[in-house]
Image 1: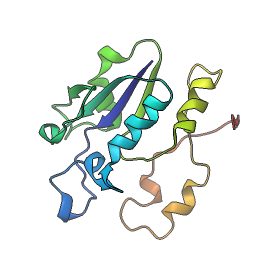
Image 2: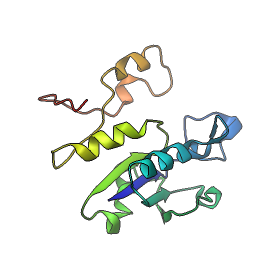
Image 3: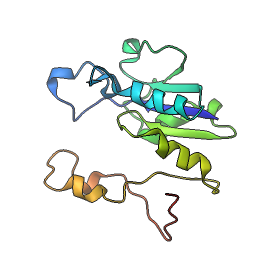
Image 4: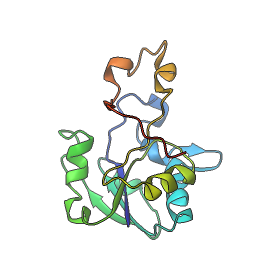
Length: 152
């Protein structure tokens, strides 16, 4: 299984204090955000990791990962950036956003699922959008559920 981390965004909503740093490289409790994801992937046995970079590709110095640069990151949305790594979209693939922290048990639940396609969803996501002025609820990425199958 390959883990693909999409880190090509330009960080339009990020603070001016860190504008020249990808969100995934922001320090959280002493280490870059993306390190938490890499650690979670390795904890479930995923060692083949691809990081899709964009504008700040020169700032990434991660060991034991492959890089794909999205040269068109300014024109692409997340799916466009993922397509830059299309050569890696074979067999079992786990795709991650680079700016979300989660526990390795979330990845394990996806791996253990019986479906052809599985997605982790925070069912309480709307609470986190209340009162937002930047990236409000109507800009959130959504998934339509016809039936909820819980694997936890």
